[in-house]
Length: 127
Image (cartoon, rainbow, N blue to C red; front, side, top):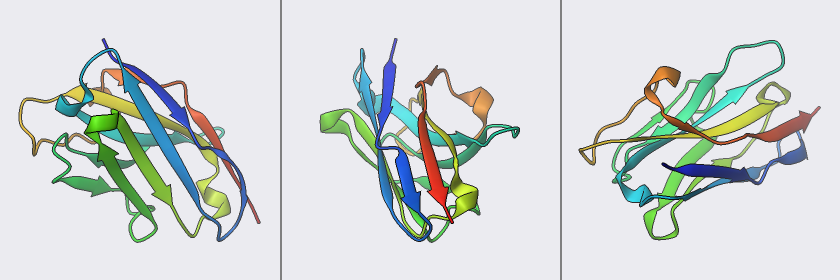
């Protein structure tokens, strides 16, 4: 079992930056694929970015490309999402998710692929 706790959300003006963190406990996080999803009011939860457990493979949704960076520090059992050039449309609850993988290059992007979820952290971008 893996427990995930997100932090780093908040209120920021358009054009600003935030860094989200996802701290994992319960198991060694180094063998888990991790991802960030988000859910805006009245909309479905969608993927933002994902990273393999080795860190060698990453995936970004089109909305995140060029603005967001996903990274991880397995020694600290933590995954990060650096968000720059934030826009009002980035306003959403952001969730961390994880699933165990057997190969360091594996990556998953579908919500149904992930077994463990955090409670979410609110990101609000004002115009």
